[in-house]
Image 1 (cartoon, rainbow, N blue to C red):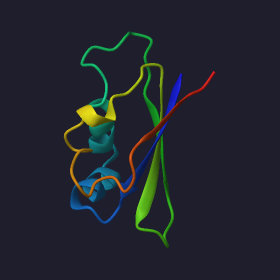
Image 2 (image 1 turned 60 degrees about the vertical axis):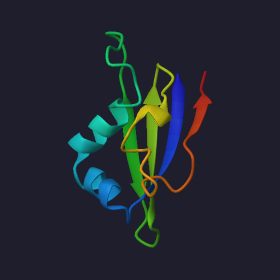
Image 3 (image 1 turned 90 degrees about the vertical axis):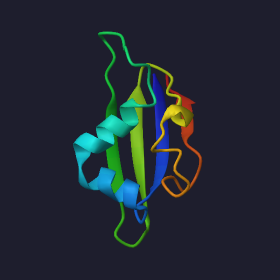
Image 4 (image 1 turned 30 degrees about the horizontal axis):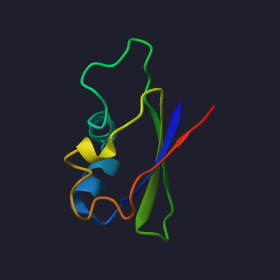
Length: 90
């Protein structure tokens, strides 16, 4: 299982739209995965946002290794504040 941490710039217009609409955020996150996923695959995510910070952390759990560079929206210059962090969790 993989756990990814995306540090999203909440001041980015595209990121702000995703954070305001969970369906759009889910679509953006799914764009980092193959178009056809295994039937048992589940993409779980959680948004952690602090009021005093321009950043929001999106934690993503998946069975498939994500390719965050494949997502056109995440590739926007101001969408992410830092490169995605991915780690394998046993």
